[in-house]
Image (cartoon, rainbow over all chains, first blue to last red; front, top):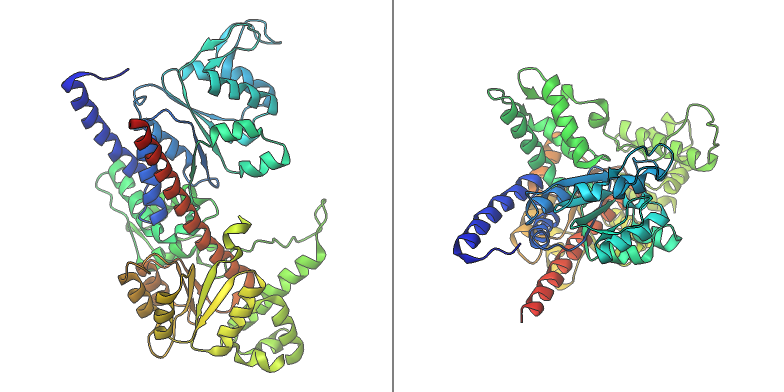
Length: 352
Length: 150
């Protein structure tokens, strides 16, 4: 394992720089939260410490895990991502640790698990919150003793795997609810890495868009796609609930759709060009089977229409009230309740 | 998550005292600790005196506009990283484009809903908290390394 002699350390240094470059390419952005995150990844990668990456779906948790792997001594060995939520609960254990022939119905042969496949490398356990409790206990043993036991076997075998866990839910909440093992949580939490959602670092959107366009250009030389300022502003204004992944997919799609290799607002989908932010509460056209909360729906609808009326009348409350068929005083009362802050709100106080 | 915005100090900068008062009341009822400034100069003076977590900046004001204030805040290392949310009665591409190039945290066009305002403020508080936690983890690791070497 250890590199000795001058030649060895020379190789190590050059190699390391190459891999630092890799993380800079993988994790794009100039927001302070991202530059600090890159620094943390560079620091944590070379050691074998367990890492827990959390963040909303699409923020790039797997990108972070791959960057850690590629900057570690293990970079030449496998990186094995496992989505714990995508594998049926009863199969997850044998997927992870393997099984002996006849361990369960259908186990016709011996199969090696993903931990063995990742030997010498890194395993990413994504959506770890979905892992069944009894399996969590077994994982804890792997982390503490470095041993796995295939299903149906009575022998424990040593494995040399670095474990990185990722979650898009707050695991501490699951611990409090009793749905996630506290011991495992603290064992994984040795180094917590939080990747912020894109809407919290809006200033990185233009940087990311340019980066994705450069990637497209690298793949298809001779084709240079640009974004008009107006379209960039629209991309910057959107909430991106699907985070960087959604932005990347969008840029790819727009690059295909646009004429003359220029992305302008005309090719943007309606969700990006409509001014009001996407509503959190959806108003159904008919009563869904699960029922609704009528009061909150009525409040939501009222708020939206008040908002629209004020926009259409440039903030003139008299005219907005008329548009909604309301008396000015009724409108003012509804406006106060709705929590909409109107421009030139001075006359609100007259109503108080 | 609740702790992070419990007593965050939000500076409301608006020359219209009524609008500022409404925002201050809203923010108080949401559990924030709002302070008010009624001009660009007042904003810059107050921000030197006390710690502020987020600045809500009205775009159009007589002494300095929101963009100018933003530039001054960015030039001073002590205030450069305070998240700024621009609030504007005019919602045109130019105002948004300028906000984008200044790297503001968010741009809200009036009328703003209370929910939108609170979500935007929380997003800025969250990301600063994330950054601080990352820095804390980083120095914890460096400290541990340093100790184990000797």
